[in-house]
Image (cartoon, rainbow, N blue to C red; front, side, top):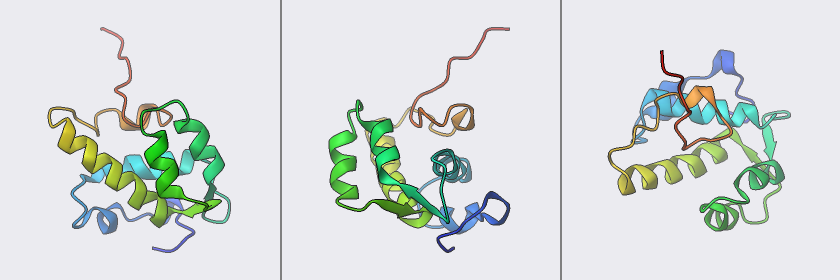
Length: 116
């Protein structure tokens, strides 16, 4: 996969292989990337930093991003994959792919569901 990965040619299985993530989790990472308004296959790290600025993960994310101003999907995937695998290790009972497409601003949150 290159830097310009559109949803129509996105191959989740390519990223899922040997990643330790499910297809839904990989698709969730892609949805988050797409929500960050990539231009020519790149997202601005400033946008990502703003989303994480009040989170527990902000210092770690800032360290991993370093001085880069943009990220390709492949770079973003590696950051999010590492973060998600660590969270899955720390919180083994949490299902990270349930409802992930409903709120891409809260990647590791479970959206509130209305009771029927």
